Length: 463
Image (cartoon, rainbow, N blue to C red; front, side, top):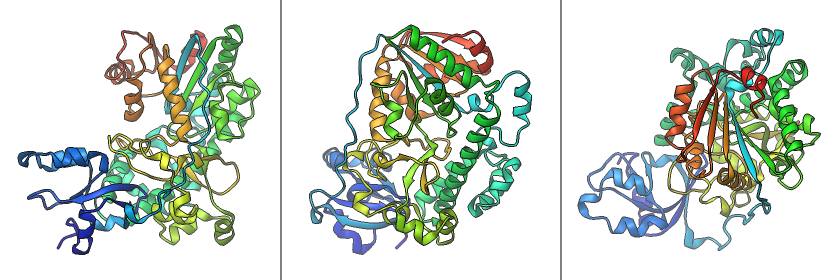
């Protein structure tokens, strides 16, 4: 028997709905099935697709059709725990549904989308060149392991091992990480999972340092500061105006300038989307360097100040980190997460409870940050943020795209539901590329305007 076939002692899971926990932390619910004449894997078909699956004709029972209805498992070793759903209590996971979100109507809604290009080019005047040469300049995607960050890189063993492969492949970071994901999701390869955890901790420390450095040393001629000032002027002069900021950057440069300009203190994760008491709302779909799941006191006491090194040394996988280190298994998964944890795939799963993401400053925490994969995409922000973002899509009339390539597939799919967009302003040298990405998903008849760069956008006061 090979790893790609259902083990004999698992046959009872071919007749009963069950939970299957993978070593990368996803939890699939369904029943095991094999595809006729297919030997490279088997499938978990979820209960909500079971009727459609059972009605398939013989000629329709193909691997391609099975993949649309469920999850393919190519190596049974990736499943580290399994149990029948009928044998667990009714309230299997926590039932936290998060806070109630107040979504008031607004006469005018603008959505500002910021990508890595904005943070990498957020200075002007004589600070521009100085910032470009700064060792702590916010990086573009391919630059996150640049030699200028070597002092930090050397503190993370998993990062040091990963860098040569990135270098060999021409620093195509997103493709390399995507290849890693494909390898460990199809075969049992815990070393890659452990390495990715180490990279997440590295990115958390990197962007925390960059954020503080930029806000402290580049405030005099900062385009984010000017953006925040122009935004405040608009909100004061137009009471029914609601700016919606969507920020794909891990750094908190824009966050800090917005808070200082509007005189806000962002202490709780709910503060980001407080429509009632704030003049703007702020979404970070891929997470933030100041977000995370806090480690319990007993874990901090056991591992001391360097939890990332201890996790790497002890070869702790994501499932162990999620459901052992961070807390008791059933408390770390929300029943409400089912439906939000599907990513690009139209089939739901469970995973680590995103309602429990908090703002973290100096407390040891597992980073709430999505690694920069090429295609594997999901939202790493609390579920109530995701609900609020849906409301923002429903009301957005103008879209400002600053330093963002428009390549995040899940966000683009959500953008298809925006039915009021009249104008799209693209702030990027590569106008045609970004426009092409957006046109495939924006369904309204709108105009597209090109602005060469962030500085030009601010100077023209286009808000």
